[in-house]
Image 1 (spheres, helix red, strand yellow):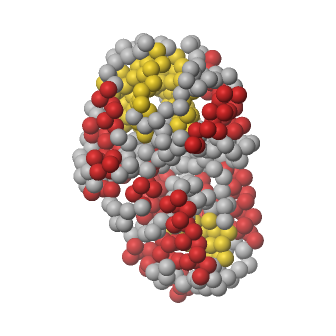
Image 2 (cartoon, one colour; image 1 turned 30 degrees about the horizontal axis):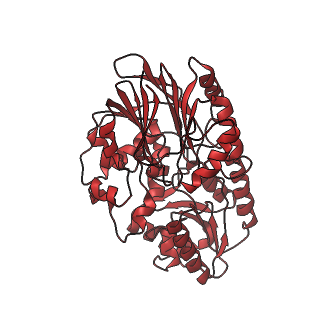
Image 3 (cartoon, rainbow, N blue to C red; image 1 turned 90 degrees about the vertical axis):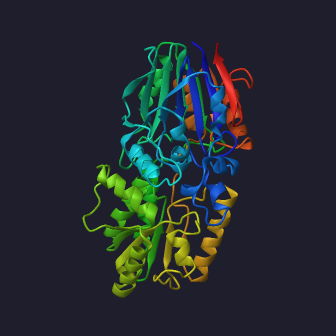
Amino acid sequence: MEVEIATIGGYEEVGRQMTAVRAGDDVVVFDMGLNLSQVLIHDNVETERMHSLDLIDMGAIPDDRVMSDLEGDVQAIVPTHGHLDHIGAISKLAHRYDAPIVATPFTIELVKQQIQSEEKFGVQNDLKKMSAGETMSIGDSGNVELEFVHVTHSIIDAINPVLHTPEGAVVYGLDKRMDHSPVIEDPIDMKRFREIGREGEGVLAYIEDCTNAGRKGRTPSESVARRHLKDVMTSVEDYDGGIVATTFSSHISRVTSLVEFANDIGRQPVLLGRSMEKYSGTAERLGFVDFPDDLGMYGHRKSVDRTFKRIMNEGKEKFLPIVTGHQGEPRAMLTRMGRGETPYQLDDGDKVIFSARVIPEPTNEGQRYQSEKLLKMQGARIFDDIHVSGHLREEGHYEMLQALQPKHVIPAHQSMEGFAPYTKLAASQGYTLGRDLHVTRNGNMIQLTE
């Protein structure tokens, strides 16, 4: 059986991920993501109203026109998890393919919301839920099967999809860390990865997320971030002024910890911002978390400002606002607070807890710098970097190569410079550039078997 891979997006940048795998006459598309930084550098861009071709020209979504070179029919569109760099282009591109969108329950719900907010295209693709550990047949041949393997990442319900073919398995390895003691989920299913590496024809190809491949050691567990966060919040327990926290809205495990520790130090947590309400509300509705009954979630600006007024009237020392804006996004809550555009007034000595790292990209770094500067000008004291990454470091990469023993390795989820540490790592394990180690670009094809 011919097996061919189209590397469509995410092979020259971190963002707008999209990869297609053809096995015989059947094609499966993994991820359709948005490169948010390409949007943020423009003022007042509303992607919901934009045409896909304009977003492609902007470098914001994958240029999927290379799909016309694949001789097969798309049987499934499979987003690995709910981050925008993996689902943000579905509402712009999925309608071009007569195929269902197959994802885990939490991811499907986020995709559904993405489609509902779309104003330019009507996306009618069927939405099919499939949980980790389950499989589905692809195409009519009966020879190709899709499997979901549970992984841990900085968002819940993430998987690595595996396409089983007669020539071996293709494992799409974006995005994960090896977390054996997560906060609200099962550990990563390394047992299944080791089995896949030794079943049948083994692993034909492994497509790997290289975000942190140049960092030594292993990525710490979310439970480490939880302990760090608890230590910081306990240390400010006796402060009688304002404390504000911010983290990734999609990081449900971290939000859960913030809510719990706020109550522990005698403050009422409140989730503020559209994306904060969206992700946490969805997680609670689907039963992934059980927040306190009195936890307020407010996304609409008027509701947020009303809540800020209530906090100012009743006393800042009684509340912990958990807000959007950890990357300094211009319209996020924390950025508005720093500019003095909300009823919440920061005073000298107030604490701002960043339970997130800056995404290492110039737009984000510039916006975050500006946000911190504004907060400090109002007298805020900043607690930074209370976080662990959602991506593998060196030791995790060694472990995955050992578990899967793939015949071919394809680095992804990085810029061309960012691939260098992973190519060195893979070379140390016996892979050779141009033979079985394929550094590629957006829009290329890799023929694995003929």
